[in-house]
Image (cartoon, rainbow over all chains, first blue to last red; front, side):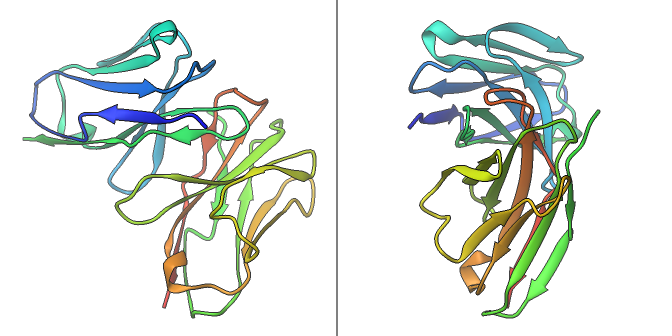
Length: 106
Length: 113
């Protein structure tokens, strides 16, 4: 089955900094989503982005399906951005990536 | 935004007891899923369900697990005889079609003591 790897595994930022999170997938995909798991464990849907670029406030995402990767950009990070970021892909079986644990310091 | 609801939010159970976790998927969705996340680890796929039968299941989903759609709205995960290692967050999810946006519930924390 498809493998989904994310990098970096851990990231510490000072508030206000920008960051780029990467998701590589082992096979072609026809869908990709980014989620934020907050410190309470909830999975917050950020983007459904099988290809192209989307923006939502300080967050944006780009998926290059032909090269099997997706990027999540966080600009002007805030402490509330802390948590784990997952990319997810699949059809009958959605597979989670390995996750990036982000900590934003005040 | 449509949402998937799960109950209970937290359950503590004795080892060996049966547990049923309940989910109400989004009303016009046709595909339903259960996932598990052991504390500090990645989110793992357990099972997908469509048209009243299991579409796919992982190696984790052994004979002690079962799923059911007892009526038109609920989707349940039963663990027959809980073990300590079943302690985890269990997420229910649904999609309108295969490959569509997947929506997750807020999870049910299961603690087996």
